[in-house]
Length: 147
Image (cartoon, rainbow, N blue to C red; front, top):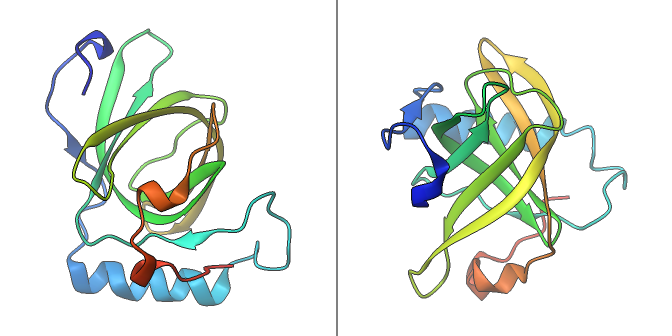
């Protein structure tokens, strides 16, 4: 996490799902995805890493809250992930990913949507401030369209 992000460096896991629970939820979401019918600006690539990713959200008080989340999909324009609490739309955020060479990349964006799935699990959509090259983060054998 960049030094200018403020606050604690500890990442909070609000979801607390086992790998098995995550796989089941990801499959349910893929089957029940309301956006499959062409409502998205960019095609989504499945990006369901078992390893969790880091996201920092700028809170109204100016502090950054840092979370561990489970990625869902990735596109040139944004990322979808599952998180254990509500995130307000238009919240500035930073998504920390490792590229295919293992380099850490910080992508800035805003929360575009937050929808309750079940229990405390929320489906979050983040729009990046600048388009990315998805191939920088997904190996060709991982490249499967997710809708």
